[in-house]
Image (cartoon, rainbow, N blue to C red):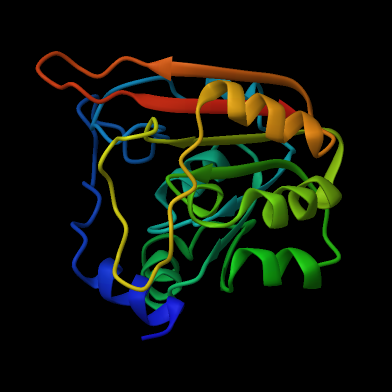
Length: 208
């Protein structure tokens, strides 16, 4: 089974995102694995007028929220079914596009630059950082931001058969790796889980 087929199978079995969140919002950004929990898009600062790339865009819901705030969005996901679902739900939004591609292949081929690159339980967790991060850095505009989240090392999470390893790294390891690939102002935070849960979320930000 190919990488795309593995993620397609996983996506088909995934539960669709709710139509509205607990606040009644139709769009929102969620960094963690828990509903209605954790920080919002404020992590990124103002997004209006900024070009945003999401690697592993999934349902497209996080990126769609940023576009409603004035960003221009490009979502890339290796699973074809993800592109189809995202276009069906969010294709009406101007300034938002989705594409099926493996993250490193897309970054090598594109001539675009971006102000923000996101990966929320996405490509940064599943692609060798020594291959992926230099490519991200090359496509970020000066002063641009990379922001990503995934489980802390040892946390159990999605890894479809055939999807390869997860690149679990500690906060200190991410600081070292990102700095080594030319990023600066690296910040790593651990978001506590909601009451009754034991596994938090790691959130990483770095500047180009």
